[in-house]
Amino acid sequence: MMAQLESATHLTRMRLTLFLTLTLLFPPASRAQDSDKDGLPDALEQSLLDQFAPTFLVGQNDCSNVPAEFTPDLRKPTVAEENGTIYGQVFPKNASRNEVEVHFYHLWRRDCGEHGHPLDTEHVAALLRQQPSGEWKAAYWYAGAHEQTVCDVSQIARAGTLKAEDHGATIWISPGKHASYLNELLCQSGCGADRCVQMHPLAHAKVINLGESAHPMNGSVFVSSAEWPLTYKMDHSNFPADTVARLETLPVTDIAWVSPGKHPVQGIIRHSATTETAIASSGDATGRALATANNNTSVALDTAQSSTGNALQKSFRKTRHALATAAGKTTKAISPN
Image 1 (spheres, rainbow, N blue to C red):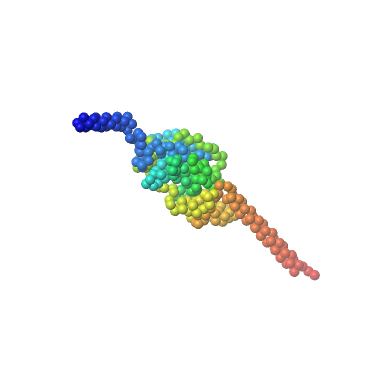
Image 2: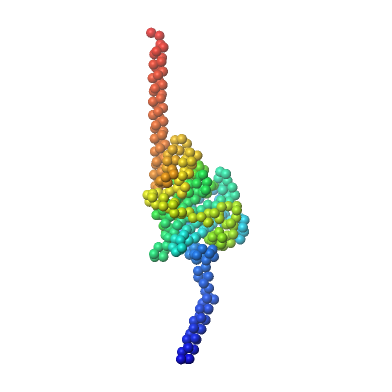
């Protein structure tokens, strides 16, 4: 009996020694490190950032060049180099961790459009879901454009609409103002300054994980600076339940406004009398179709302009004829016999 106890004790000691050895060689932190304390391993976050990094199209002659990389470990946002660096963030959407939100930030030295200012904080986002097979797929994409302003034309779409379920979406970035668009045609939205012309793919250098605002990673302490609204954007979801539910009522081909109630105002600001009604109607507060993946919106606007032009021409011809007739009758009335 004593021999059996001694043998069991020896085996237990061996197992404990092996456990301690493996722990020293391969600490748990190295296997599932979670630097930003959000419940997701750093390795998983970086893998998702790399897989779903968008293809950004930027202006060839943007006055702020390309997105910038900022000096780490400095609380004041300080441009280290304008090299096309993209910053990322990944955080869970539910307790089971099988649904996550991914943000991609393109940060610029300055906004050099109308009412320009130093530093420009822009981003797009994706809502990802883990499949039974373990792989991750995007369910929705969001593009921020003039967020939190009267000119807000941020958009949301199903990932299938954009053909971007297992990789990044294609994003158009307006030169100067750097608003993000899910569709090239939509780049003419907003309050009139945006035009996506002479665009080319951004060859971004890398995707750097920012972590969370309370627990920044990779030296990104500049996220909490009051000089830009980066903390606010990091702490808010771009896929609230009511917005997603509204999108799901639309046809699968549609891209939707995130804040549809603002768009009639923008139509009046941006467009002349011949087209403002059409624009206002296409973006009214009901949240109906904004645009499809084809050129239906463009065709609708062309048709509206053509119809308005035809109506004005007909009205002019009728008015001219009526005036000529009236003039003829007047001349006949006062002519001598």
